[in-house]
Length: 181
Image 1: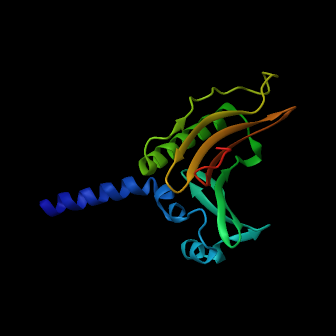
Image 2: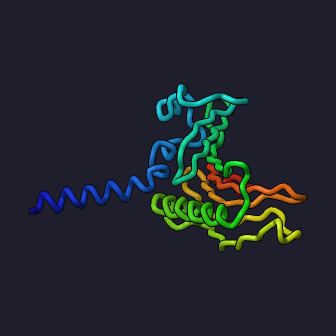
Image 3: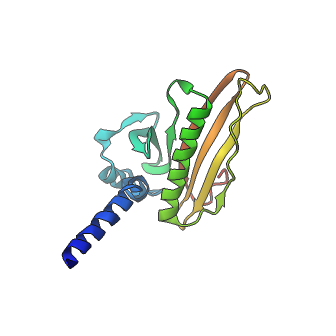
């Protein structure tokens, strides 16, 4: 009986942690200033493509099929970020609700790993740019963590103006004292 309960506990913990695997997984082992040779032990070079000094790696974060971009300088990781843009730049309430749900799941996962965010914005409501001509770019939801080694920001952003609109969800990782967080 004790073994069954112990096994059940292990399964529950494994399922819980796997829900936040992106935050506590291989990406979390990447550090700003890390040498590329050490970085390639975490994410093999063969799984990435090089573009303009940046290594790009496709990965699913929550339910977002996006891409990590690792910027390099002097053979070291300079900064990195995850970006997701909906297919066809779809802008509507359904897409907004989906991206908000995913952003909140990312924030929950990062909070599990890094604790309460230093900054967490209120959720900005959906504004239909096709009905309200005054809509321009705005942050829908943002959270920021500062750790001893790095700063981590995730945000759901609405871009646009003059008839061109799109939404994105991003996770930015940079030096902890990066002034544009």
